[in-house]
Image (cartoon, rainbow, N blue to C red; front, side):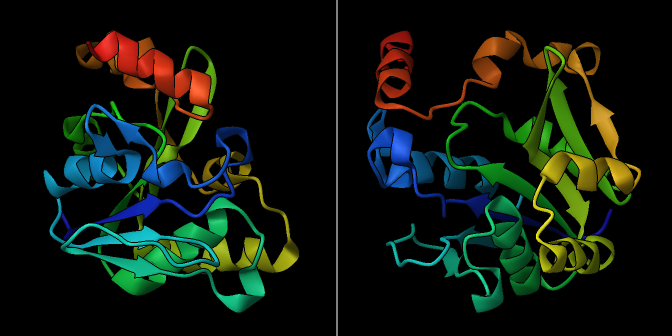
Amino acid sequence: MPEIGAIILAGGQATRMGGEKALRVLRGKTLLEHAVEICRNLSGRIVIAVGPRKIAVPQGAIAVSDAAEHANCGPLAGIAAGMRALGKGRAVVLACDLPNIPAALLKRLAAQAEPVAFCEHGGQPEPLVCALDVATMLPKVRDVLATRQLKVVPLWKNNGAKILRDADLTEFAPLERTFANVNTLQELEGEQRRSQ
């Protein structure tokens, strides 16, 4: 399998979280630190897409900003910035608000990223838990960004995505916990309680 890099998405405005979601603390670490720790289990090349701003990133990772022409274009802009920084191989993509994703799940996605693979849980797509072939997908992501068609799922599906559904993910059960998304302060507090 080609070399694996990791792209962590931490560039959102986090309005439902009251700002700076990536720096909120859960179980003694920031959400960003959790994401880096997960990705370190399978890659030594970790880039963090920080959007238009600057934030401190954990040691060993590098911050990348969205290209100026992709300002306010959501997660695809961060994915493009991350792929541009990695340059080659395969990349796993993880949004920083998914602190329970196992590294083994990302590794499985990377093995099936020909050219892209993502998860679907309970019939709902999880397009920001994915892996892709950088050389194949970077121009396709850029083309979509140029048209301002910013939906991730159609892009993945239109490019022959392999989709891992609940039946493929039983070893990572309970999947409600694995895919627990921390978007609000209430969800952060709930995840903290479940961890105690």
